[in-house]
Image 1 (cartoon, rainbow, N blue to C red):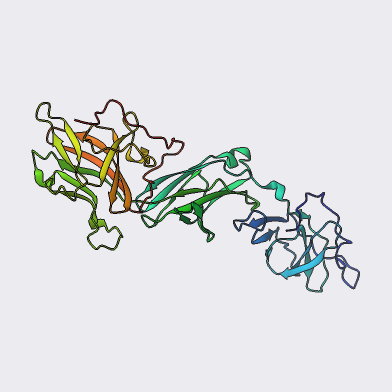
Image 2 (image 1 turned 90 degrees about the vertical axis):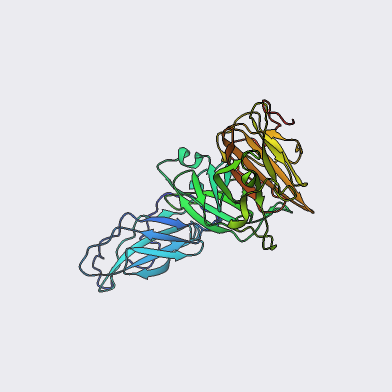
Length: 391
């Protein structure tokens, strides 16, 4: 791409064909206030084009405008195009400089407008970090607002891009798509398929259309979840004392809504992930792993603010022990069925004598530890203190 340079505005009368008609008379009024806006492409070095705009000339005998450009400061201005509108779109990587003249019915041409110079040094700062939260059929993205704060009068918006992500190789795909734009340092990428990893990047665009470099890339995977699931203690209602994150009824490996978050009979010990046990001495409620491939652990060292506070599932520390259900605490489940590994999580919202209520999430993508990610939160997880891990 040709280098963009910042130049002093030039006198242009001698830079293009004669600005005075054959009769020697003066030309029409000169176009004023020429400005421009680049069309971002995702590649800050290769915009899709440039849109030129100027004040409309009100002369009654105005016939058209002529647009001139040049690729370097040493070259001459050549005719780029002609239009009857006071705007002009030049497709592709733009030239270095542009100017506009007006032409009347007799072919007499005005003087040149101000010269605009396309200068890539006007790019905004790129976002320094990008975080995400996994949601049901969506991903919440959040990043620093440096691009706006560094140049608030020149900032226009952010552009959000996404592509596929290969969990096995740890690589983003090449087919990047524009998810949307926003003026806020956050964005909800919705209508996404659960269990399908995506890779995201964010750029900032100035009012002139200069696109910044991209933020660091971020990968995340939407996953099903639900709020306020009620499960009884086995001694109170055994028919609703068990819970299974996913039952693949169709055997196709794709989670249907009717197969997720199933409250089942606590006697189905070969299939439910856990049942709720009530201690007869103090009436506390406990999670008891049942399916042979299900293990669990406490998330963090204390209560979590929300289900979305639960981060990446750790790769160790799981146990077949029973764990006490405590309001506000989070729990992560590692489920191995055959050779397939999946993760689930829940956060307890209420514990009574007869039942408990919790929010849950489940990652349908095999081996993918993405559950939810809170912006700025460490991915480190430790066995909780203050909650018993065995009984």
